[in-house]
Amino acid sequence: MDIVIVGAGECGARAAFALRERGFAGKVTLIGAEPHPPYERPPLSKDGLAGAEPPKYVAAVERYAEAGISVLTDASVASIDRERKAVVLAGGGAIRYDRLLLATGARPRSFPGVSDDARRIRMLRTHADAAAIRSALLPGSKLVIIGGGFIGLELAATARKLGAEVVLIEGLARVLSRGVPEEIAAVVADRHRREGVEILCGVRISEIHEDEGGAAVLLADGGRIAADLVVVGIGAVPNTELAAAAGLALDNGIAVDETLRTSDPDIFAAGDCCSFPLSHYGGRRVRLEAWRNAQDQGTLAAANLLGAAEPITAVPWFWSDQYELTLQIAGIADGAETTVRRELGEDAFILFHLDGNGRLIAASGVGPGNAVARDIRLAEMLIAAGARPDPAALASPDTKLKKLLAA
Amino acid sequence: MSSNWVEVCAAEEIDEEDVIRFDHDGRTFAVYRSPEDEYFATDGLCTHEQIHLADGLVMDDIIECPKHNGRFNYKTGQAKGAPVCVNLRTYPVKVEDGSVFIAIS
Image (cartoon, rainbow over all chains, first blue to last red; front, side, top):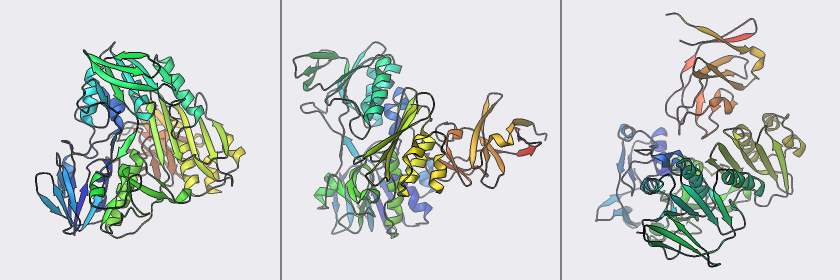
């Protein structure tokens, strides 16, 4: 049997190794569009922006050869021929598959009217993007970030460390409005302001353009903000073009079932590019853009490419690092009726979100270093177990969450 | 070969199925008490991104890194899969007169 994986990011690489870990002895081909072997993207907006060369590889380069995984870099897939069961490369070559995994990821959403060729208006997804942004962030230079999500805020923190002045513009009323509770977003925004980042919320932008030596952001109220560099971080869109052209079902991404199978039984999809039913949340369909999800689904896809038919059971999990703060979130808080706060010493706390039946559906924490990590991990296990913990116990730092798990 | 026993703490200062950080002579270690009430020691930092493992969660014989969930068997030091692929170094441990000692070679 031949297995082809399109997309050589965290998810595709993890799937390739997981196939071997499960004893698969057939051919494995991993196809990536970038010039590098698979690398970790999370560092690109954090310490990795500040000059990591080469990027932090998912696995040492020699491990692919040792595992018998053939990696094609700088290779663009033109189409999927489902009749012949082959992936057609740009330039004409074709690679036959018995089972295909699409791990094509997502790409940054571009700002309307901004050319992809703009040198002073950038987006951040790849190592090349990070290198280009890094080279423009000289001490005293002015960076304007569009978008107060994880990418924009992490980049703001890194740029301050490098000595750049930073203005961050968010269209909504606060930063991190997607998936992060207001109390935690406020801690993060305060931390940035203490560091000298100017955060403008509820501001509408009418245009961004390059000009002599820099770029300018024109605001709907007539204001103008000049910058040496503008970075746009306003979300990501899934790479579904190959799947769409091949006639696979789409639904906010490549639609897969609970085993990551697409509408073609021989084709699976995993990671940022796919939407899937989330069993812990009544089967609601979600698409996650997260490193852990990419790993988990890569591993699960490998099992299911080999016929295991195992369902997705992972609880969504995200993290972000900004300055000395780490934020971690397990689960999805939408639909929470009760929120309980647990103090974890100096400047660290966790919010537990419970639904109307008292079931724990999410936990969001922020604090210096790894102060919240252990309890968030335990919360994730409580969520997976469908637990209905006593809110008073969750709020009391003297109650060990491990005890609640055993109960 | 001589070993160098260093006192870590009183045995009861580590909870069952838990871990503490121990810094000595410019190095950092993680010292564990298993659910079976046995003591173990490893290097203190995860082999993936140099994070203190003592902030992580101990479950049975596994320590999980608090940052990216890399897992190791703390009894053997064995890395249990992505994102960690380099094993942890382990150190001999003894309990004497209610105190935990580790041998730092």
